Length: 411
Image (cartoon, rainbow, N blue to C red):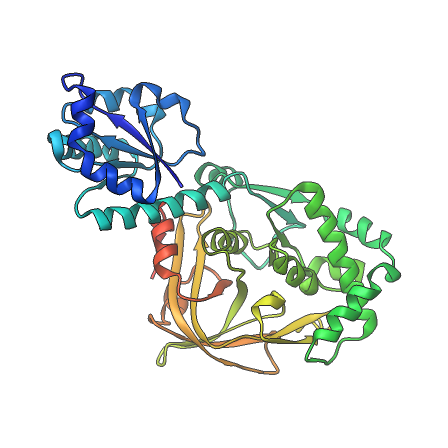
């Protein structure tokens, strides 16, 4: 890991004496990072892919920083150990930057804590860079009932660097019709052979669903997409199948895939992936017990790698195509949802997955979660319907990242 220190030092101080006075902190940093000292005059030689801190080496550098305001990394992280009046200068600079709307933080204090904080900041930086430039394919249009899940394409691109791109369903139909049953026969046999059981679905249903997966995968490859969200219900009349299997297999391949054209939830899943490396489960909160702080999350698709076993079912609402009933491992989970038209709000809580339920009047994959925070949120202040579950406790990591990007936590 390369740590670029954009060094600001007063012209009144000799360079050799400046570096000598910071020997303690520089030596400590070099134990963990490859330290690259970049003097402020060379700041424009750095790129947006370089992880940088502002190293305030002396006092009296406030004007030097202000003059390079447009070139400073965002957010502006100031490193100041207090030597040569550096902390005094950092305090003044941080206040000025925040007054101009730039997020700023000062690293100062015990060296082990500074090192730990730099690793967190680096993780946030890498996640932001991974998100920036990501292309999310919107195949079809958002479902008509998702009235509170819109995203402003332009504002979300300005905030996160992501790009939503609309793809007509007709393109899916064209590829789907070109794929023969024989082309997917072996993949269907492999998938069915690994299932715990097969209930309502027929071999013909599985063949159609696998053809649809191949058609969507071709579009993903052609468009170089990092994620997709699919208008599942609209394609049933044309194909006779649903997208549940396609979304499950794409998620297993690392292509984030969400249901119903939900623009907010697919971004949430993408953010989880770049931060944690984990795939996630997008679902409906289908039952809520505010007294016991329990919820049941349910949907008809989930990545197979997230399950311990899976059963091949039909899609719940339409009783057509292929649905996935996943049996998930119990244990710690995180529930999260990014919302708002420019993706600047979020809900976040941990909980424990206690049970895989099997209600006949819900979507196929069902899990009961004992929440660590009041479940009343879902009844009094929800960020829409769909929420996203990921195995493990990632509350601190996700909260740090979303806070660093100026998002408001909803509780």
